[in-house]
Structure formats: C-alpha cells, structure tokens
Image (cartoon, rainbow, N blue to C red; front, side, top):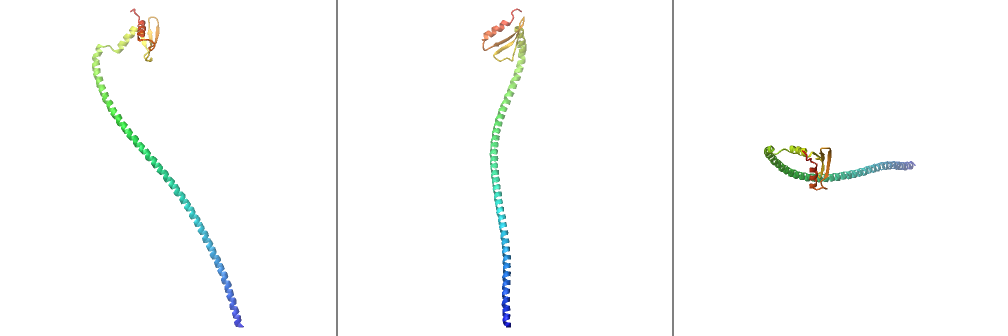
Amino acid sequence: MLSERLQELEEVSKELLKVLLEDWAGARLRRSLDKRRRAEDKLLGVQAAAAQTVTELAAAEEAVARSLLERERELQRGRRRLRELEEEAARAREAGAALQAANDALRQELEELRGQSRRLEEGGEREDEAVPSAAYVTQLYYKISRIDWDYEAEPARIKGIHYGPDIAQPIDIDGRQHSRCFVSDYLWSLVPTAW
C-alpha cells in the first residue's frame, strides 16, 4: 500500500507539475503575446513615421524641383535680357560712333565757318566805311515813311502803324489777298509829298 500511495502521490505530483507547467506556459505565452503585440504596435508606429517621412521627403523634393524650375526660368529670362542689353549696347556704340563722326564733321565745318567769319569781319570792316549800317537805313525809312512796323505779325500779313500828319493810322493788309503792286502803291500813298 505504501507503494500504491507513493505511486498515487507521484501521479498527483506529476499532475500538479503538469498543471503548474501549463499555467506557467500560459503565462509565458501571454507575456510573449503581449511583447509581440507591443513590438507590432511599435513596428506600426515606425512604419507610420517612415511613411510620413517619405511623404514629407516627396513634398520637399517636389518643392525643390519647382524652385529649381523657377530658377532655371529666371536664368533663361536673365540670359535673354543680357543678350538684349548687349545688342542695345552694340547699337548704342554704333550710334555713338556715328554721332562722333558727325560731331567731328560739324566741328570741322564750324572751324571753317569761323575762319570765313573772321575773313568776312576783316572785309566787313572795310565795307562798313562805304555802306551805311542796317540801323541807319531803318531809321531813314522811318523818317521818310513814318511807319512803325509790327515785326511779330504772320509772314503774309503787313502790319504796323503809320504816324501821319494828323492822326496815327493802323495798317493791316493780308498779302495773300492783294498784289504786291497794290501793297506798294498803298504804302507809297501814305508817304507825304510835302517836305
């Protein structure tokens, strides 16, 4: 009986050991499952962060590509503007050279005219003694005709004031409507014959 009892005790021990082992294995399995679930949660978090980073990188690459394209367009516009400015500068240099040539020609012509003017002045000094001045001739005409001319009138108009013996009389003749002969006769008719 002892041996049966021992055997029973051994079987109960084995059963207890089995139950204990099963509880331990279940607890261990639960802990493993918890660890696995936490690891999967971390993995999903890392995957979500990686996906977010990839999205942000793609957006950044797109922004950089757009910026690069815009800079390339600006560079092309700048190159075009530079070519236009270079062409304009070349035209301005050509125009400047032409103006310089024209300026040189005008300077030479001015020097020639100055020389002619000096020669004419030298010759004019001799003629001044023989020919009365324009002011003298104008004063003489005024004394004879007593007409004060309006020099600011239109080219076709003959305007002035005749200071006759009795009263001042305005003169306003349209040269386009009358012949030169008529105008001359009319003006001579204003000159007094009695001296």
